[in-house]
Length: 280
Image (cartoon, rainbow, N blue to C red; front, side):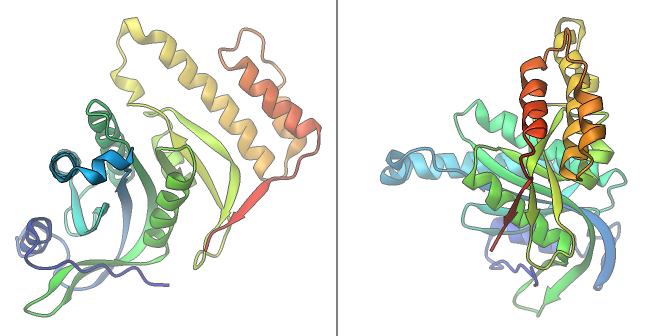
C-alpha cells in the first residue's frame, strides 16, 4: 500500500511545501528513508447549513487551513498535500525536527483547541515510524512525498476518528514519547490496518501539555496521572494479560477515575474479548 501524495502546483499550500524543499537547511534533496511523524487532519462538517452557505463554508475552510499552517510553523511540520478537507502533514521529513513525535501531537492538539473556539471540529490521526521521504514528480508537478506504513496508519486513524466520537487518535509509539507531556487515554479496541503487519494499539489525546498547567489547574494534572494507571491496565488487558490488568486497576479508592476504572475491571472480569476492528 502506498501513500504518495501530490498537490496541484497552483495551490498556495503546495507551493509553500515544494518551494521549501529547495532551501539549504532542508534535509531531503532526494528520496531517503527517515524516521518521522505524520498527522492527517480532517475538518468535520458540523451541519448541512455550512455546505448550503458558500460564504460560511469558505470562511470556515480558510480558518481551518490557516490554523493548520500556523500549528505546523510553530512545531516545525510541513504540508505534504491538501485533498479536500484532508491535510497530510509530516514532521522530520524535509525540515529537521528533533522531537518529532511530541511536535506532531502538539500540532494536532493546537489545531483542535484553536478551532474549537470557532465551533469547528476536526479529526486527526497521528503516527510515527519510518517512511520514504523526498521530492517526487517532474518540473511541472512536484511535492514532498511520504511513502510507508506509518503514513497509512495516520490516514486510517483519522478515518477511525471520524467514524467514532474521537478527535485525535495516535499510536503506541506516540503515546510512549508523549505521555509525560499530554493526557492520553487508551482506546479499548485493536485495529487491524491493511499494509501494517501488527495489530495497532491506539490512544486518544485528550488535552494540552501537562507541563504548562498552573497551580489552579492541579486537579487536571492529578487526573492525568490517574489516566497513566488506567492506560497501563487497559494496555495489559488488550495484550491478554488479564491478571496484571486487574492488579493494576484493583485500588480505585479516592481515584478521580474510579467509575471509569471499575467499568474496565467489570469488563475484564466478565471475560469480554478485546474488540479487533479490521479497517478496509
